[in-house]
Length: 271
Image (cartoon, rainbow, N blue to C red):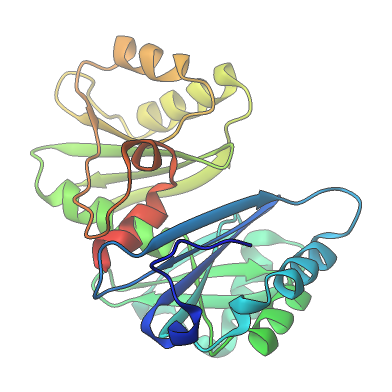
């Protein structure tokens, strides 16, 4: 694989490597906290010829440089199988029990992220074999759920708005929703966005169950919707619709700003 000329993997410890796992895809990007010009993103879908685990293994072996010692190596898990537990009710020794209660059938390894500023834990699942393989193959990787990147951003933006906010982020043929009353999280969820009617219904039903007011509360959109007409219909239904804007610390072109998932853009804001 060809990398940009300004990325020299002989000095891989100067760069950060971020890997992103979705139910049917794999992507990674290389960037630098010290050099905004360093950015390379690569995405690939996982075929049906091999199992999910085998696909991941083949990619890591084929892209041998991913195992090099980077400054930081992180793995983001994108999955609807996550739940939030307030800090006061969380016990690390009971994460398996929490997962069984919420997901019924626990297939995989149970992990949790602690968001100090939010005062809750995100409990989520990752395929056990994939986690074990990446832990062995990558250089001291850290794992986290996509929600651990999105929710602090949404909370921060919600605290800047008057009234309540509903954030809708489109990604990976899914939609992630988080609703806030100022800085207080009301609900969060992720569901497929494969059919525009079903997607629209899911968004509207959450809005109505929380008794949001269409005349005063705000719908804030981000990501790349699989069906652009959804955005037009949402703007017809809700008077106060805004687009989420991020100030990146890494140089990416306009097409990448539009197409990259929001959680990746968040990491590029942190660089």
